[in-house]
Length: 279
Ligand SMILES: Nc1ncnc2c1ncn2[C@@H]1O[C@H](COP(=O)(O)OP(=O)(O)O)[C@@H](O)[C@H]1O
Ligand SMILES: [Mg+2]
Image (cartoon, rainbow, N blue to C red; front, top):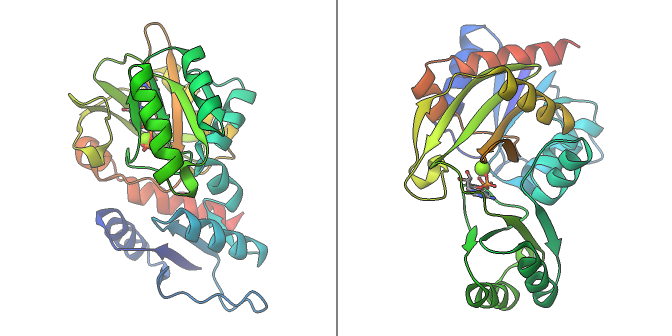
């Protein structure tokens, strides 16, 4: 059995994964996405499985596609990464499978975006379809702010801002729920709490253990399955009387989850990857 781990940097998470592999006597290579050269015409790798931990969506997507086309199994696979890395694709898939999400629209010009925002009514949240860590997400409270923001996105935005992903703001209770799904099981879950409306760990949210209820378990497993399954972190908001999924992360960080719950997440990830490799 030989594992490869596609990495950008070695963070807390990757260190834990290396330790878990060593503890199981599994041979592995660290494959740095900065150094990798892939020859399309020649499968120059010999892995039973490659675990993707790259922080770059472009690199993940391109490498996973090549590995999968070479017949190498990956966690997650290319199809799952492709859907989860793009909030528009994720939303379309989840909604089509009946997973509850906040009301969400997409538009492609400042004029149509403003029309959609007004129709949805304030406050709304604008997100880059491809992005993470709460970056470049805006809460828009009124028409004046919306006008300024769409003009800025149009004039100064990169390619990723050429579509306007617009979502109803959910007045959640100062926290969201992050559920880590590994295969067909819930590994663990936490509340991420913040006085700021963005509750990303990278924005300084603190965590509290969350006891997974059967409702959250069912919703998270169904959402993960809808996008193709694997190692996935499902972000969930509490609306007044229901739970709403907002996104699914395909290379999740898990330091906060690990420190809060003490669950051996890296070990569970490696055991799951072993199962996939053997299939
Ligand atoms: N529709 C929404 N209503 C209220 N808060 C939201 C909404 N969407 C996102 N948030 C907040 O912003 C954070 C980041 O949003 P998310 O969609 O998960 O994007 P990212 O990929 O940047 O993590 C969430 O964890 C949540 O706290
Ligand atoms: Mg998120």
